[in-house]
Length: 319
Image (cartoon, rainbow, N blue to C red; front, side, top):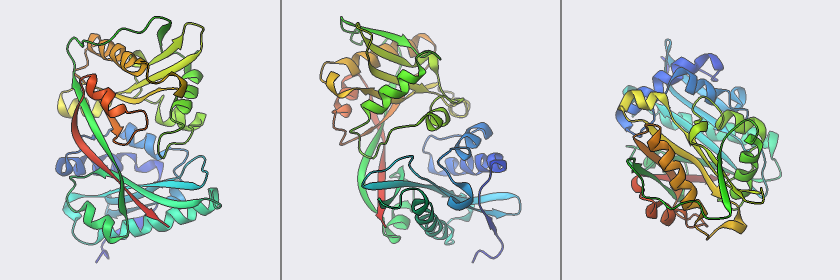
């Protein structure tokens, strides 16, 4: 069935081939993800992606036609949720390639899990938009079940009518000086978010302060006493701007520490960021939200003017 293909783990040298494959997938799946070679290299260099043990790619000559890679968590308690990501070139679908890659990914997840968090229960997660043709059938056939739903929301930018920062609080943009406070507040704010774990410094640098990070639209909220209590981090992908003509300010991280919730702080911080993004020429803001978020984020974002655009399903396999 796949006798004409060659198979091997991914490497950093596959950045361009990976970008080419993902961009070919985007032409059919239309999930709003476009890639440069630098973007895919950043993902391949993830310190929690063990490419040698945790990835597999299929090539037809020099062209990558399918891949799978897993990311393990830097820490785990009772449950270790490993992410499985992958894709198949549209011209190579319906040939069993996806099934082979998912099976390889689950096997790799077991190996990497045993190395890093053997005392925890292993759960393999797949997180993809629900409209992708054939995906639900594929993952269900491998024993995955839907466990959570997420929503992409968007906000066209003009002159946002947003609440002011409440008295007793101040906002400051990201800088090298407060970077560690950004990370610390993120970790504290996400402590009770489903599936989230603290981000160590190496993961923060790989996933947040990389080439897509926009410090001029990323803000820390402080109490007047100086204590940092809220954070908003913005990313923007140049490949998306080039492909769509829309400059999108994606709010990757939004959170307030637990003791400061229910005071309108998240909405005020988001309003500040919306105004900043509009002033700096962004066309749109976007974010992803967990429908079951404990802080009621979906309602906060709707109130701020965000509207639902695309739903994601989190599929899980308990191993």
